[in-house]
Length: 387
Image 1: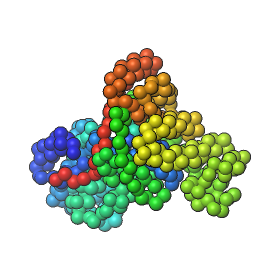
Image 2: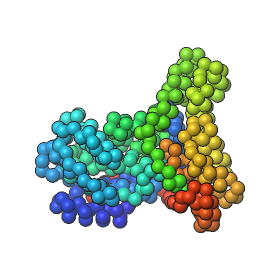
Image 3: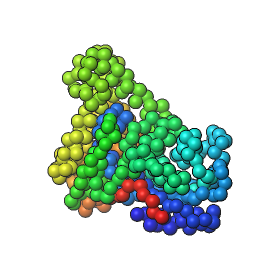
Image 4: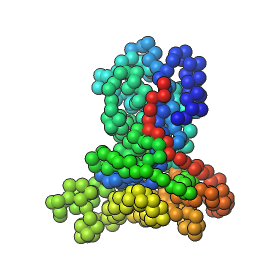
């Protein structure tokens, strides 16, 4: 539990609004492997981490008035349920969308005061937006006495991302934040929206995130273009193979046989999807067996495809991954998250992290003139009501 953040948000809320709030928390996540395939009915292998968004919220005695404050940004917004809010700051999409969606379903039960803070680095591919969606939705469901199960909550948060933030994301980020369990990775089937927990026993190794310091926006046209390419490729495959209903039914031979019917870009995007679905299943088995070298090699393969075929990497990410390949204490590395910046995730011997970071920071600063930020992450628990 993020006790420091809980204390901070509780004290702020009581000073600002003068009432006792419901307090919820939701974690960020890493994705060990399975990138850009959650929206293509793939498998993914995320894990909740020990970095959180914490929300404090209470009914304010009005029928439709909302007051929201982002503590870390020192920004406030007010609105009423029945008024449009077209010029909202980016962070407010995730709160406004959750409230507005339930209001439109006629489930609102009173105006809300809400404040939040967190320690999930922004723009690093750790799904701070999903954590804000999950912690907000959980708090509001409590205040409005909504009987919402975990899976419903994840789907609600995904729709917030689609309809209010304009990002046609898959279910992974919201699911990992809500279903996270300490010490467990989640093998998530994005087709059936079912999961199993995989014990994440890394021994002397740890996951280290290296942040490029390059910002990215998933709402940019590039993210949605990738999704459109995959959908177009699947349509083409279905024309030739009646057995294909989703990407899960596609093998490499079928894809290759349809290559001449696709433009080169679409084919490369599809190649990544087929490879990555297979890699995730291999990675889950490797993690279950404690075969960390195999897991590391699969991570490298994932990055190669994401950079070469899916083209969502960037020079900074590629540089950091290449830097690890000559280090025997690093078993694997790849870009993580939406791409075009953000973090690499590295499977590294924990005792060697200081030496590695000294070398990596110097090399990265020499190449790009940017100080390298890094975070060693441990597993965390999923979204919960604190008080």
